[in-house]
Each structure stands twice: as C-alpha cells, then as structure tokens.
Length: 499
Image 1 (spheres, helix red, strand yellow):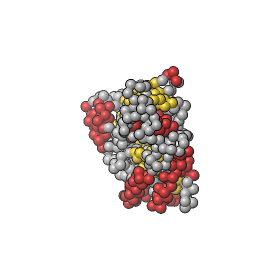
Image 2 (cartoon, one colour; image 1 turned 60 degrees about the horizontal axis):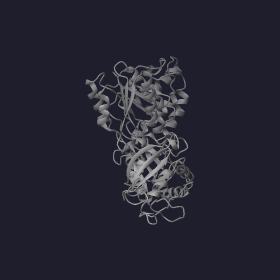
Image 3 (cartoon, one colour; image 1 turned 90 degrees about the horizontal axis):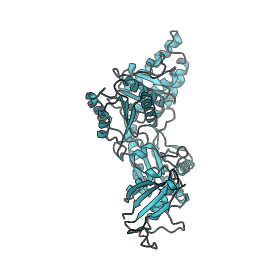
Image 4 (cartoon, rainbow, N blue to C red; image 1 turned 60 degrees about the vertical axis):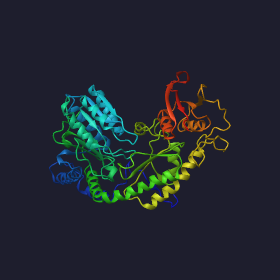
C-alpha cells in the first residue's frame, strides 16, 4: 500500500472506472432503454430514440455520419469485424493486408487469420526505435496492391502518435496500382478522448472502456463508399456489420462519457502532459539504468513507458502493487507471457523490467508524487533480490560478494577474450529474463576492451534484450548463431566490449 494508504490506479490505457456521467446515464437508461429498439411498441420506440441519440453523439466526435457508425460488443470485436469486412469487400482486387508491426494484437491476429482465409498475405511494416511507422516502407508495401492497410492512431503501449495523415496519402497514392486506392483502418482505441481523432480514414474503431465508458461497448465506423462485405452470418441489426443485439443502456453511457471527455479534453491533456514530462524527467534522474521508450514529443498526453535494466518485470509489477500502485507492463518477465511484447520487440528496445504508466482522467499531482517517491526504492529492491543481484548505485550487477564489478577488468587475466582468443562464454541456458542480461553486464566489465562475450541463452526475450542492451550501453552486437547441440532453442549471442 502507498504511503498515504490509498491505492493509486495507473493503468488507464487498459481501461478506466466508469465516469460518473456515464454511470448516471446508464442507470437512467436501465429504466427507459431496456427494450428491443427494433420493436414498434412504445418501449421499443423509446429505446430506439436513446440509441439514435447515442449514435449521433459518438459520430459527432468521430467526425462521421450516424449512418456510418455502429456499435459492437467490444473494441476487439470492432477491430476483428473491420479487418474481416474490409478485406472481404476488396478481396477481388487484392488479398494483401498491410499493417504496422506495432498494431494491437487484435489487429495482427485478425490480419493473419483473414489473409490466410482469403489465400492472401499479411505484411507487417517496421517502425523506428521510437515506435513510429516507417512511412516509405509502408508506401512501398502498398505499391504491389493491397486490400487493406491498418495504422493505429497512437500506440497503446508506448503512446507514440502515428503519422495517420501520411499513411492516408500513401493509400491514395496507391490508386494507380491494382485495386487502389487502399482502404485505411485506424485503431483509435488508445487515443479517442485524449487527442482529436484523425480527419482521414476509411474505417475507424474504438473501445468505450478506454474513455471511461462501460466495458462491452466498441465502435466501428465505416465511411460511405468504402467496400465492406460481412464475412459472417448477417442479421438486420447495425446494418449487418455487428451481429447480435445492442446493449442500449451501455451504449448510452459510453456516448455520455465520450461527450464529457471531449468537453474537458484539452484542459486535462495539458495537465497530464505536464505530469508525464515530470515522470519522464524524475525516472531518468532517480532510477539508474533505465530506458524511457516511445516518442518524447509526438505522443499521447497520458502514457509514459520505461524499462528498468536488470529487473524482472513480474517482480517489479508485484512490488509496485504491494506499495499501492497499479501499473502494467510489456515485459516478457510477467506471468501472462513467455515472449516479449511485440511492440517493444518491433522497436528494438529493452523489454525486461518494463513499466507502462497511463494516467487516469482524475489523477492528482499528489498521487504522481507518491509514485515517484516509491519507484526508486522499489526498483532497487527488485534488482537486489534478482539472482546475481544489482547494486543500487549505477545499476552494475554485483559479483555475488557485495563488491562492485570492476569496469576496468582489474583482477581478470588480460588474455581472456582478447586478441585471437576464444570469446568468453556466459552460459545462461535455462534462465529467464533478466538473468542473461545481468550475467552479460557482469562479465563484460571484466574483459579487456575489444574482447567478445558469447552469451548462451534459450529465453525468447534474449533475442530482443541482448541487442537492445548492447545499443543502450554502446557496445557492439555482433549477431547470433543457433547452438543445436545445447538444445533446440539454444542461441549464442556475441557482444564486443567497446568502452
């Protein structure tokens, strides 16, 4: 529990508690909006009136028409329906789906599944180290013809705002190619209610729980003239684009929350951007060996993500939870996954010890102060308790006796890993993150300049973390080779000491 005894929720990007305005609208709609809005009797007509009002309110925020906007059972469902429907609608001209490599997993899974079902291909375009789409590569992927392109408005893990307008131009430029121009699907789930929606898109999806609406409400908007064909059994509801009945009270609550957020958006965004700037500065100042990831300028106002070297992600999240702070992580060291976040992997940044802080709408300065006060000691404790240990000052892994490793290699034979000698080997097989990087950091301080370290590891995260650590620490990453004699997943990673 935090010092003041009150838990602090810092995972708004996953979803927020229902906004008071939404809760009030939901309770009111339970009385008047419970009936089937497709029925002609008075209860049905009343529910239809509420549903139409909610649709108009959401469409206005999206800069869309009400008849372009439908409601789904979740943001994930909206994305699945959008990918399947748009790809099916243009399948006669192309069966290629182009996405960025950092799209939400719902988009990537839907793209892989749909492309396979149609007999096409899914192309994932690379991003920069800041998580920003490489527009030229994206445009090149479209030039061979594509049914659909998917670019999120802003990344849900690191907050980087994507160049949606440039992506739209690339889709228009593909008009001279087979089947062009290409339909552009924008996933606005992380951004809607936080920054203005993009002006240009063919289809747009969002999730109500991200803006303080109830869970179980998604939004799918498809511009008039966009080819869309349902790849599922259709019914008469929501223009055949979202099967099943609409939860009218929940939809009304979602619309009420979105309108309330839009009314305060600029004021809250300015305050949260200042708080995030403070977090970025304080984390860099007070926590040794930390990498702050994502674009520092073109980003969402409420998200900041950083990776703490030599700290296990699961242990870090649990310790912060015990201290009263709820955060999330893209770390491969969390209980829910054995592989690193595909977003961090695509960016080429450290994945272990990753923390995402996303500020809720009503966050206070005092709550941020408490988090910043607790973080340094929490990280130091997790590092110290990791196998191998890490000393608090400077983050250099210890030698197991409490003395810091020598950066000059004192006490180590000069011949180790130098000249024509074989590289010194660190055997981290069977050990999960962050141990391979801890062992690498410990050993590289003991070898001469120019010497090479060979790290044996079978943890999937090592493929990302060792190159990323080498770049962060300004050593040379020389590549990897499989070591089948040590196991099916065994890989040798080579790193040369440069300073």
